[in-house]
Image 1 (cartoon, protein in one colour):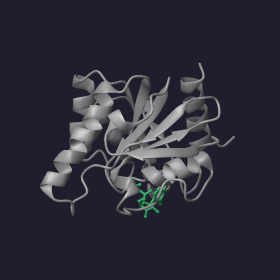
Image 2 (spheres, rainbow, N blue to C red):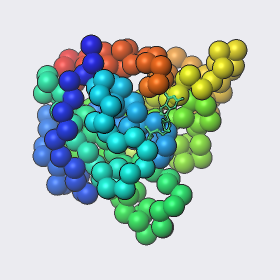
Image 3 (tube, helix red, strand yellow):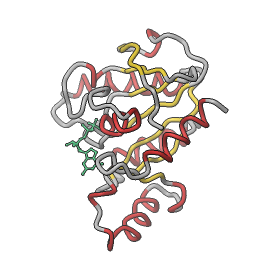
Image 4 (tube, rainbow, N blue to C red):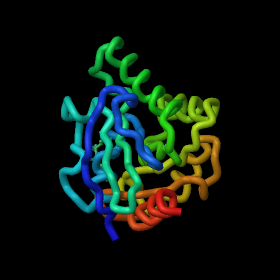
Length: 192
Ligand code: GDP
């Protein structure tokens, strides 16, 4: 079943977001496939904007699920065309949210399944571990990895993150692979 997701609001700072009892968040490098994944989870095309549209993608976006849970779309990091000062603002925004947001159950860190983890992903993962923020890695774009290479790629990606193969959730937003499992996982986290 697709998650019945409804867009509620966007904010520049997490302190401007309405409080919620429990939520999951999504974070990842720009272009990792975060919007596509959120749209696939909701079975909607335009819920989260695909590709780097200025505006909403630079804000924290909050969506609600029917059971009372909340899904938070954090701005993508590492977009090369963004000047340093703006990047620092993004970082402060993301870190502030992750450290201070009450009710955050888990943050899903998206890593590009074909090429990840990148240096920035590893930095983010190390920071999350050091800050004791509960997180789970979701590897995206599984369809881009040839079937014959998948076992090796899964092992390499997990090793690059310092984890075991079974610790990583693999999805393809394009093909729908792993989407239902992730929907169920999110529902169980938000409606225990
Ligand atoms: P975001 O910047 O993280 O929100 O990434 P987008 O969702 O905008 O996706 C970035 C690019 O990757 C777009 O060209 C998408 O069409 C493509 N993409 C996203 N998910 C998948 C996937 O599962 N498979 C493939 N082949 N391409 C994908």
